[in-house]
Image 1: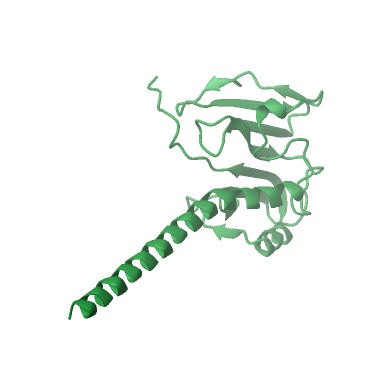
Image 2: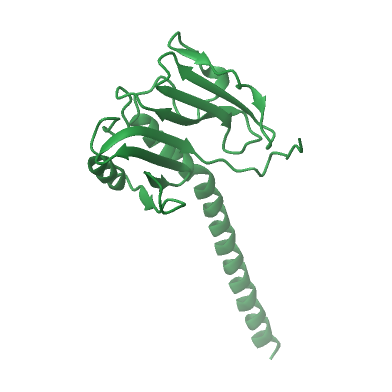
Length: 193
């Protein structure tokens, strides 16, 4: 009888151990995916973007070229505790924004670009190209269409993880492309002004 109880307890302990190991592995997998996946998408974006600066690259490693100037409001402290730096092209066609990433409390990295300049290419499309062709390219790269926040919006949104493409156009032609990385606010603090 004692032997039978010992076997039942032993089987129960094995089951508990197996369940605990499986749960631990799932948790580790979740953490890896939560932190690695955004950077995989960003790496793909950077490989398919011909701009001077690359997304999620620290501001300290950026050399500001003669084609760009620092915007007057740059360097201000945001309400989330991070600093924002804005670079504007001398022809005012392009702006780069640097702020804390992946959290607003982290070091400043390139998180956004707004451009009306056709020399900037994303996955092969640029300003002046067909909106339909651009949306097809985005969909081929796993970006998903998102309904704009209000019905009269004059732009199209596509999203993949932390990355959002916003295409503005008149009819069928792209007039402006905005690409941004969303950030969290877990590590930062709120400043009441």
